[in-house]
Length: 182
Image (cartoon, rainbow, N blue to C red; front, side, top):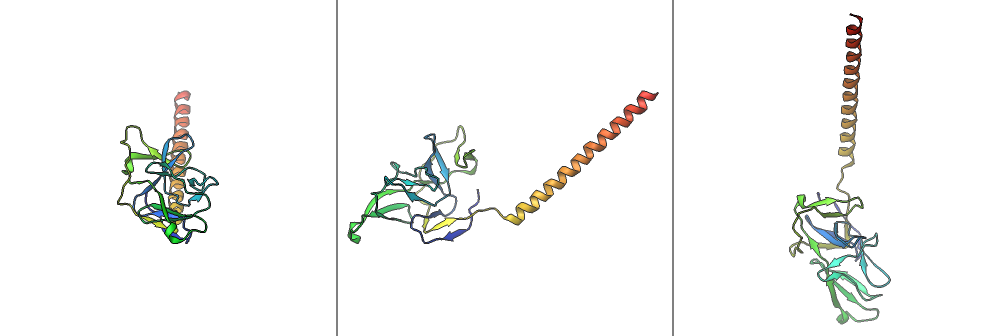
């Protein structure tokens, strides 16, 4: 649940969320889901999608822009588009990314890598205080060294427990031998 480091790409459709923000997307089953993966793209029909093809949700539903338009995303999540050949006066606001700030215990990771509300959790409202960083994506928040040390410690604990079980089993067999000879 921790934020990862930002990598600045300069690509206008890459977005990272500052703090504990989550993008709202529509999962394959039609339900609402949450992700921090902000590498967005525009489909042929103009729909704003994640890199895996899931529709990105705005305040009024899935976001879409005019096909072929140049898109910019503001720090408040506002999406503006300029059609091909239009002057800068041709900018039009086409929607706003729906970003939420759920309590850590309100969401759980699903098998598809997306996060969803836990049963009984209150529906999430858009949080206007969250800031979007355009032209950047969030990196992994996993520390490889820390993960390796944890994995080695877990392997050693497992080996120690297996030795204890083997020792207890050996003691049990010897006790049965002693009792059966008497």
